[in-house]
Length: 101
Length: 101
Length: 101
Length: 101
Image (cartoon, rainbow over all chains, first blue to last red; front, side, top):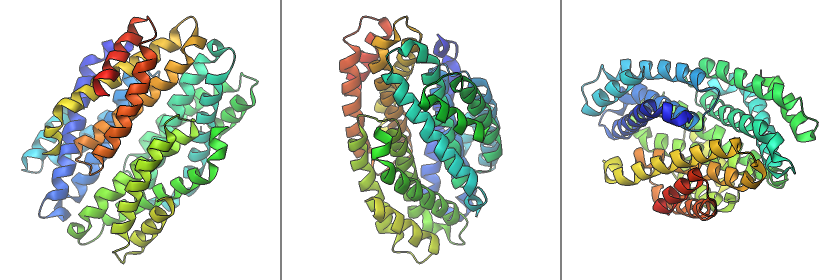
């Protein structure tokens, strides 16, 4: 079945979504949220598209590859931003995003 | 703000999402669901991406145009299928999809 | 059909989702994002559940009333916070949330 | 962090979402889709709320427990239906749903 061919990608998306949501949550609790505004926005964009693609892959959507291309672009943007920042949650998020991209 | 520039598109997406969800609901109640399997699947794909793009536009996502390109492709596929079918809910869905595509 | 009985609620949810997403977007651009962290989080919670309930109503989900109860609670929390703040986007969001709640 | 307290639940939701999406996909390909209409609908309801709750838990949503209560109810309904059916994908889905409920 479709979702078995994509098991590895689904797992990677799941981890990226988790890292992005964690980073989003942690950024909103940082002392200087201002510096974090860009990450907060990108974390959400990234978590949302990862979750969307994950469901699409799981149900064998005929549009998975189109969605995957957009997802890779968003993950790359999010990873590039997050790696600029020292927080451990940002670094972990950056790695997860790069893995997808 | 971003969401005001896109007000017309947001409204059209909203109507398409409604038509697709209505068509999905109605197809699942038809006597011959077998004939409807393809529509059921496409209706869901289409409603989901319309809802996703709608939210992205509303929050000024920097990836709106990438998502819009995928959405247009899915709407076109859904519209092409639905127009083949006489049911009023399919015809309404086809029109709404074509409007987006 | 189910979605017609709920047309008024669907429209109100749509407007609330729009106000929340707009407020989220605007809060992330404010000079003092720190003050806004709580709104940013609630705006997202609220926009997400409104979008989810909207789709559920549109497809005649048998769980619409359970989802509506959770949605009302989240809208109330978001409206209560946003009304404390003078920004026009917060006030507009508060009103839309109260309308649902 | 919030998402770590809930790691086990997140994993179970992920597996349930996968089983439901797989069952949805497989039901749409069965010879007698008519018999499957109820499952197709419930599978989607269940996959959607599992995905929604998963994201909510990951981002430390203050409304996770309200969403979890609705999710448990939907999983129970889906599990009760799917267990009536012999298909291996339905049985697997039923087990995953019961696990959550």
